[in-house]
Length: 195
Image 1 (cartoon, rainbow, N blue to C red):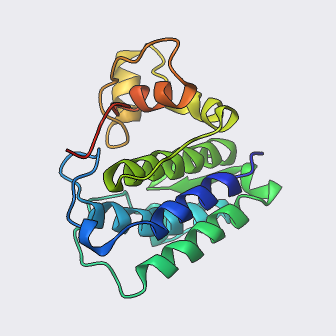
Image 2 (image 1 turned 30 degrees about the vertical axis):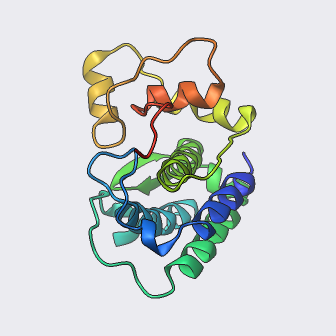
C-alpha cells in the first residue's frame, strides 16, 4: 500500500495556482488545453475514488474520453475535494486487495492503486508545465509507478495495454531523474515547455 496523499496534495497546490487566463493554453497532452485537462482530472478522481471502494457503475465502467465541456462552477474547490477523496479512499488497505474496475478495465486493486498514483502524478506534471509552475515527484513515488509505464517487450501486448493511456516512449537519458524516466516511458517529453 502506498500513501497517495503527498501526490494529491501537490496536485492540489498546482490546481490552486492555475489562473483563469491560462485555461485555453496548451498542455503536454496533444490537443488538450488546460481546461480539458482539468475536466479530465475532475472525472478521473471520481473514477479512481470509486475504484478504491470497489464501486460498480458508470463511474468505473466507462472508458475515459476527451472532455471539452465548460468547467463547472467551483471547479477548483471540486478538484480539491476530489483529490482529497482519492487519497482517503486509497488509504484503506482493502482498496489494494482483490479486483476492481477503472475506465471499464478490470484489474487487481494493487495495480489500480498504482495507476491512480501514476495518473495523479502525470497529470499534475502536465498541469504544472502548462501553467509554468514547479513540480517535483519524490523518487520513491516515481519508482512505484515505473512498472506501470515500462513496456514488457511484447509488442502486441504493450500496444494493447498502452492504447489510450500512453504515447510512444520518448528517449530519456538512463541517468535522468526517476520521474523524467517515468514521463519518457509514458510518452511525455520531460523537456516540454509552454511556448
